[in-house]
Amino acid sequence: MILQGKRVALPSAPVVHKQFEGHAGATPDAVAVFCAGQQMTYSQLNAQANRFAHFLTACGHGRGTKVGVCLDYSIDMVVAILGTLKAGAAYVPFDPSYPAARLQLLLGQVPDLALIVASPATAGLVEPAVVEVIDLGQLSGHLAGLPVTGPDVPVTGDDVCYAVFTSGSTGMPKVTEVRHEGWFNLLNWLTIEYGLHAGSHNLVVSAFGFDLSQRSLMMPLFCGATQYLMTSRNFDAAMAYRMLTQHEIRVVNCASSTLYLLVDWETARGGDALTRLDYMLFGGEPLQVERLTDWARREGNTCTLLHQYGVAECTDVATSYDLADYRPGEHDIAPVGRPAHNTDIHILDERMRGVGAGEYGEICISGTSVGAGYPGGTGPESARFTTVVVDGVPRRLYRTGDRGHVNQAGDLVVAGRMDAQVKVRGMRIDPTDIERALGRLAGVRQAVVVAGHTDSGETELIAFMVPAGDDLAEKDVRTRLLESLPRNMVPARFVNIPRIPLSPHGKADRAALADEYKNQYAGSSTTG
Image (cartoon, rainbow, N blue to C red; front, top):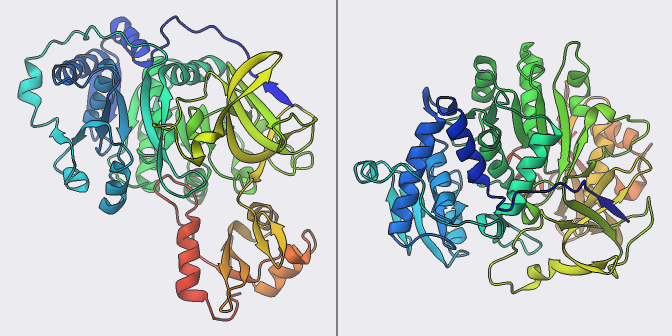
């Protein structure tokens, strides 16, 4: 089974920063970026980025090199990213919201790093580093003497533009590289498909290290709009909502769990900042659509909810679905839609053969969005990048490890991870199936199911539930769950908690929940 995205011609040099430069020439006085009360126009941002690009090339850090960026969200961050791209280099985000020990681990995964851009507030997180750590603030005098025109560096669509970290199936962080052509194709598709324009101002709410944030950072600059940045290192719902209220922001990209928090914030306070948005683009984890239903049906809500699917190895987004088309009676799981431009979705069996319509298989991605892969190209993870023959033509393909099928409407449905199933008393179970069933129960606002172990070492399932009102009684939840799930899928324990913890990427932090259970609940009676 193959879902084919629309074929759209790209420029001969599909390079993302060239699109930004076009806006800098056409609308030089338009505001490009706003942060902490400060703003910079397109012409000013372009000039500053050009100066930094000249600095990099003069240091020998031009085309084909990698530049680390460890900065809080700021105008300097945008300057560093654009300047790196203009120099022909690729940037690598080192998220300052991570602990220093985590950043040191990530640094060890990028042996060919040229230098790191940091600030006095973040430099300590990446030191000691084997490469030079520079501060743009301290370089301001030197940069002021460099040309404001762009460097003469030929950048092509095949060049790597950024590299982000992904855990992969081993749990060990690996860096995966994205090419300009794939990034340009993604941003071009979003612009065309959803009519983004100079008024499509964006607010970044996700952590810098998240692959989704790379798209969110560049999307408004690609279409000539304004990029709004929060000063908080970690997600702050109050600050995000305040900025949405105070500024003419039209677009937000985030993980599903972050969207729930924003919707809850608006619902509790009777606001309308989210309902007035043009688009909310979200995904990255199984969707609990019940969390959004009442808000989405509010009178006067004009925000289009786009449920999207993709992986870091394939430029973040591969498919998109308008939730306005979602009908609970027709869909057990909310679809993630159809492919982006120049992107194909393959549903393959264990022998890499296509399955029939409606049949489950592994979701694989081919086309322009497939990234450059893992540096070095060794190890079991690299085998996920492979080649298949379609209509006699070899196609480079990435095996996502996700399980799914294409429904009768021709939309992709993601059922879960191929490797996320856990074996409980000899039966394989996907925790996301249980989470969906819990989410449909009255009184359950949100639920996450993790695997734990008894004192004897046996695997058991623990359901962490955020109640919509009073705490949920274990006996009642168990009884209602048995009406839709077989007994072996009903968790052994149910724990009421006030909120689901989020990872720095804004997703549900399952590891933190598993640790919480291990530290506080293991060996105790079931909480209800």
